[in-house]
Image (cartoon, rainbow, N blue to C red):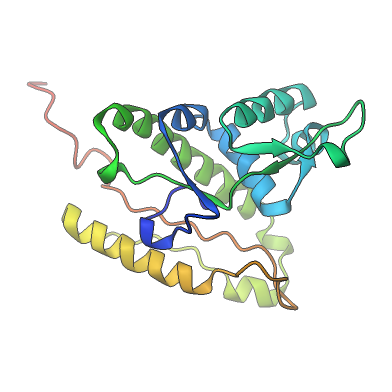
Amino acid sequence: MAISSAPSASSPDRDVELDTAALRVLAHPLRLNVLGLLRERGPSTATRVGAELGITPGAASYHLRRLATGGLIVEEPARGTGRERWWRSAHRQSVHEPAAAPAERREAGRAYTRAVAVAAADRLRRAAQEVALLPDEWLDASAYGDFLLHLTPGDVDRMRGEIFEVIARYRNGDGEPSEGCAPVVVQVQAFPAAATALPPTGDA
């Protein structure tokens, strides 16, 4: 689920830069996972989304409507029936670059960033449940890493840009995936270790 990326990894004709209203819509981990599911698996219904994410169809329908209100998904009326509505993602990925955001967008961006982190952790948890079932070739190629580095904010920004450049090289175009391909989630997290970069709170 490519939710947040650097500008170098985005494509203006296929990606959306999140405004304040969209950031507020996406400041919910479950809603991010609903959107990610549509981007990963293609068009779906509330019933199908609910079954995949372990929520009721009613809850899935609510989150789908909120995403539609934010312009992040659109309905596919040709595939629907009187009782069933199909939805698809309106964009390949959502882009939010905090450093370039105006002041009024930064607070909404904080809530969104927190939701992205929670949603990513949930996706990793669900992937962990399937590790025992993976074919050897996929298990051998998968990577789960956790590295402690000592960096400045500038170092992290440069490293992030380099990582996104690599991801952009491996991203498929609009054509059909080649034989043997499967959707692969590449998660990128770079953040200060807990309680090491917070401002002082006064005397204990």
